[in-house]
Length: 97
Image (cartoon, rainbow, N blue to C red; front, side):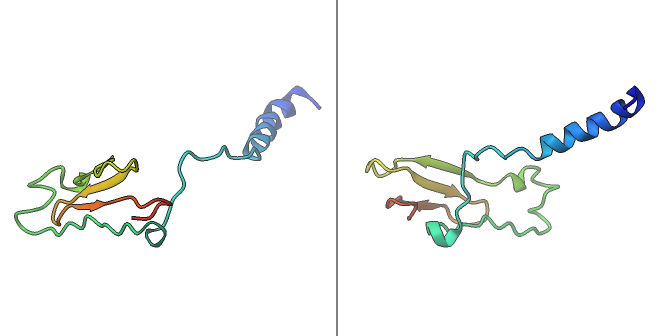
């Protein structure tokens, strides 16, 4: 194989070998609302006075807090909403609230 073909096909072959590598394990797993019991959606309804032009950060959301709010040793989840009420989900073990 001449150097011309090595420099042409070498990187392609190396890229193929790298693409076949196993993916590392993820840090988090996605759980569905039916699995966790958490059903929260921060829906935003725009109008003439409440929109992205008037409130630049409207789509950044309210926020999420995680902590042991009821002091039972389990992490609870607190969601804040822009246009809806806040919601506290108390952890009852095994990802159930």
